[in-house]
Length: 389
Ligand SMILES: NC(=O)C1=CN([C@@H]2O[C@H](COP(=O)(O)OP(=O)(O)OC[C@H]3O[C@@H](n4cnc5c(N)ncnc54)[C@H](O)[C@@H]3O)[C@@H](O)[C@H]2O)C=CC1
Ligand SMILES: O=C(O)C(=O)COP(=O)(O)O
Image: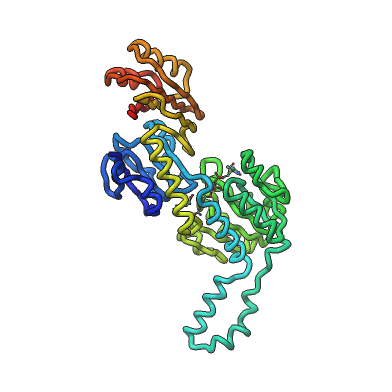
């Protein structure tokens, strides 16, 4: 029985992937084998000895200490694209909110009623203060052309916008999905200087933290509308507050508000609702649970952010799953231990990703615990699991 801890509310459709006869899922299980998580901050999380995998039902993994997981031999998964449509739809909404002052206008109407005014009469007089431009004919800059950015860029062309996209690591899949109407920018400067609307769709990491700072803002068009449904940390709050105050930024729509940025003028704050649709919550939960199940039961890896993809059909009675450093001699050392003990390898696959590698070895005989321990003790080996079929 595998013990799975859910650190956030996970859609029941995902939990049903984990058959109750083989998986015990709860919020308070101890020494869990696997974790299902959404945005809970795991940076201070103490890993129990048994923990083998963390599945993030969503895209961003900046809430998970990836390096610490890799060193502990814990696989981290996410669900690429599973919530992209939900975010795309909210970005369209955000562009309109950034333009038409619906938020300010709606609050004003309620205030009028609360103050005893005849709302039907006052709206026609008062509405002129909420005038805002149309998005058709304007220029949109999309920073990050991944699962979400591509969808946003494509639909914006259909709304009559001129669209620039920037992504220095554009994947082949993303390039193939991108509309030909989207112009590729070779640098951020092109986006900043040309766009009336800028929307961020890239991960928060050491390279991107605080990228929207005074120098970036200074390059932007006066009156630019900025949309951030990616992560709050991409923006330098103090610099943005100044740009909002001066009017350089006409509106900032963010899915990641904090107390400081809320003090700014023309900030529209959404409580991290990008992926909060039943469809997206279900997609992400099902995908995360399937990946977690396949890893725990079969050692297969799909959509891991720290380990290589590897899927091997079973061809023996037992399977060794070895996470190790990507160093010369690692595979030879493993096969030597096995051959010294007369263990015949039925099938073996090795894949690497940056500093880490993963080797799956199928064998057709029982293997002694001390042989498994010998592999565990090899240089660079971080985790060994023995699965049986
Ligand atoms: N508000 C919400 O609820 C949600 C927010 N997100 C956020 O949106 C981000 C993007 O999500 P997806 O599109 O699904 O991820 P993705 O991984 O498919 O796309 C991210 C893209 O950013 C690009 N990129 C990386 N560094 C870059 C840089 N320095 N400059 C420009 N592009 C860069 C990558 O090459 C990739 O194409 C996530 O990392 C997450 O932080 C994602 C889903 C929901
Ligand atoms: O997938 C992401 O990166 C998100 O930000 C969605 O977060 P959530 O699962 O809604 O807490």
